[in-house]
Image (cartoon, rainbow, N blue to C red; front, side, top):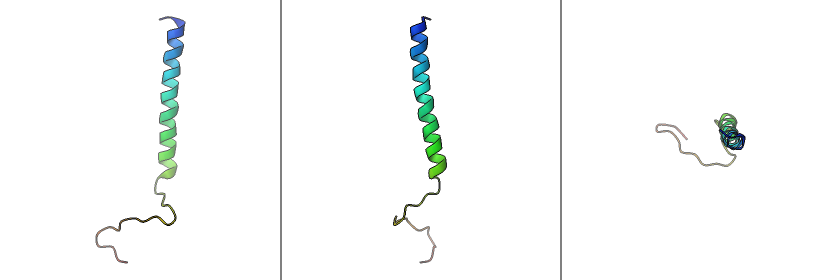
Amino acid sequence: MPTETAIVVAGIVLVFTVFAVTLAWTDYYARNFRAPGGTYFQEPGATE
């Protein structure tokens, strides 16, 4: 495999790895986030 091809493949893998890490970080920190003033559906049987 030529050096240039290996560098391009490594760059593509790096971009997808950074994207996956960003999605995982966002999912972790946004879990259970409720926006102020947001409207959410109540579960069946919930009072109020």
